[in-house]
Figure 1: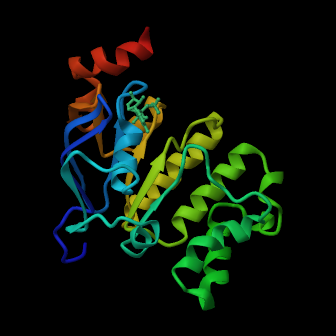
Figure 2 (figure 1 turned 120 degrees about the vertical axis):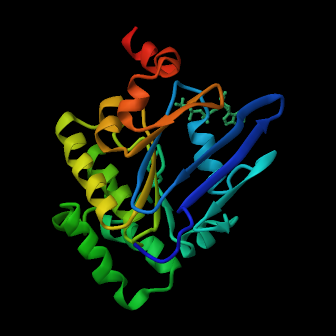
Length: 242
Ligand SMILES: Nc1ncnc2c1ncn2[C@@H]1O[C@H](COP(=O)(O)OP(=O)(O)OP(=O)(O)O)[C@@H](O)[C@H]1O
């Protein structure tokens, strides 16, 4: 552990409104160092809005967000400098670039050009993408493109990694590999906040789960605590079972 006792992420009394719609109401939670926290909840609960607020893509009506004890910066490059990476639901890969070129992009903006190629190549190897480095990213199947997006987010060795539906659209086998990877991140000191609909995956990888419903936190706890919380069943798991 480092000497820095601040959580990697602190969300305090966050309220976000889109016109008349209050998407988040007074949401508070932390992600500590070496912790994987999952945000779950039904469609429209506000999960992606939390991510967007952390990345300063939406402006809160009130409340605050801090990263490693400092106010969250308001640009992607400043977020990278502060050790935050994110994957997107839509992957956001650059069509027309190779796998390696995609993974090099955040390193280029960090100006680590000298070691960038080696760092990117090592990350591709770690995610079993080494032999596809020169392949156009568009030529790969979805599950592999998803791994490229993950490699791109991880290549800066972020202190806080935000994963938006990492298991979505993956096969059972791919999800199992992803669970191994997420667990390994925790031991390497990469704190993770993930949004996910795949409840089994969440229960397997998360240290703590934050449950949102209609923009409010209805439960926070370990997977076991959350699983047995009646408010969660009503808000989310009940819907899954229905
Ligand atoms: N840019 C926006 N403008 C207006 N309303 C928005 C905007 N973004 C989100 N919303 C609304 O805010 C609420 C929360 O949406 P959000 O996408 O955060 O939910 P979510 O939990 O991520 O949902 P899903 O699981 O379907 O991705 C929803 O009612 C949504 O329609």
